[in-house]
Image (tube, rainbow, N blue to C red; front, side, top):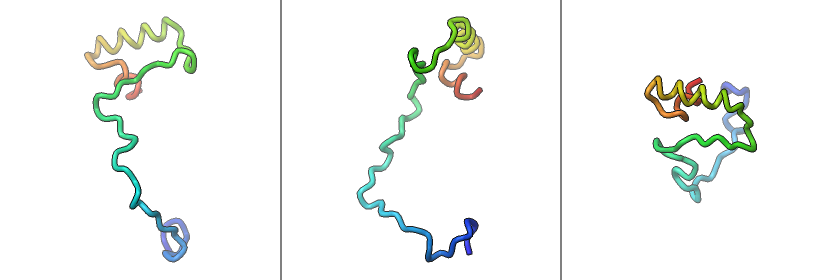
Length: 67
């Protein structure tokens, strides 16, 4: 039995023959864009985060993603 408690015979096989490698990979240059309507941030919070990113010398999206 495997870790999930299923026999090897019960694990489904996946067909990746028509898959596209890297289809959803954004790459290292991808940037976070705050969607104003979907994620409402107080202007003070956004300003604080922007200033903190400048102080740290890193892009805003990296600062937010590392929090």
